[in-house]
Length: 189
Image (cartoon, rainbow, N blue to C red; front, top):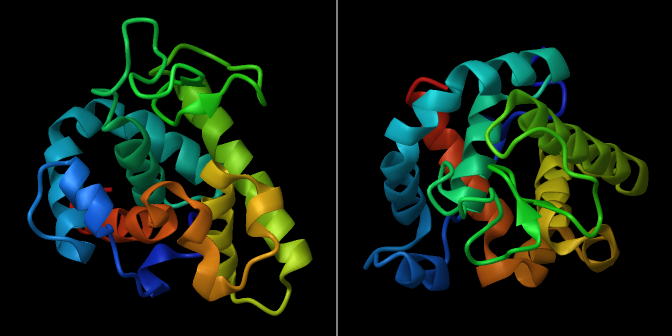
């Protein structure tokens, strides 16, 4: 049931862009950079593994994908202020960086309730992609939903599959998240 909404291991990905790599002090880019960034978050991510796994199983989403979103969005919580909001974006809350202008935030920044809210939002976006892009594979729809997660539906729905990341931060969000999901799937998630 954990692949009800698409399986990231079936997706090819280019991984992190040069901008993401440089912003994180890396000299490599692509899947190698994504793997390094995911590995950097592993120790902290293990604190949330039970909640990630539970939410993923209950909602039909790969735990590795949830961990990858948390890794990209908040570096497993290390990029949050003491109030639980993002250090780089004070409008976004918690591990999964839910924007307070579009959603009433739920739970505390590190809670299962918060993870559930982020995953439920992703599922809504996947359903939107299934409705608007029925000719895409489940995995392509998933990647489209990931782009919508940070860039908004209105910006993503007008794009082709190949251009999804053109409107995401560092122009690599869905590609980087998928690469990190591959890594987390091979490392206990």
